[in-house]
Image 1 (cartoon, rainbow, N blue to C red):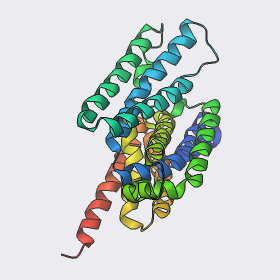
Image 2: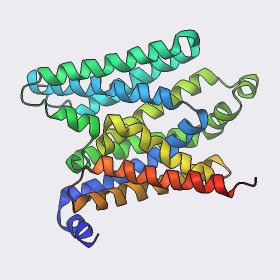
Image 3: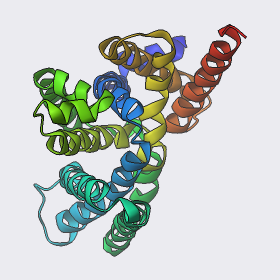
Image 4: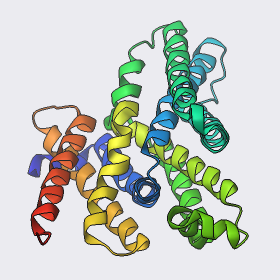
Length: 280
């Protein structure tokens, strides 16, 4: 552990890795709580896997066509927002075929990403980075983008907190009160998409749903209100990313996978402890 903090103090890329974990925890704690409460994990999974298409296309245009201003994260943001709107609309309008359509969007997004990454000369290795993440590759420019996304997510949640609360817990009552529940549902999915973009650099597309939901699920055992769950979930995500990064440093393990394993162990302990604590 001492070596890890020594590396953080002396190597900028390690400091960036630590900072992105802290920044990601804000969005993860806030949006992850909504995802778990609203039980839309499978929708978030569809959005997450669709992001690869935007990442691959942006990388292809940047390298092959000279659009050097276009970064993979820009493509990820666009893909996440488009997928969020489409998946949200499908889940509202085509419930009888919801699983099939979302599965198709999930697969198409992944396939498009793989194709464009393959077509990009010299960058095929990025596929593994996108799928499983590499927090050590996060740049200072990425940190600024993530900070902006964090600010947008927190601002929207603060502005519409009560409306999101109504949509999550009593959608029918919210509709009767005149709240446009469909709009706020799709807006919530858009926030989920932006959070996915933030987390892709931390743990990758394959593991992003675990980090999005595990801290919120643990927090749900020990809190009574939504905002309390958000705060505890964010704090737990900071703990998981920091300790996961520290544990992986010495043996040179994949940081993203280590973070998820650590989070998963804590979740199992919390779940078992909560079960045992219940009166029989």
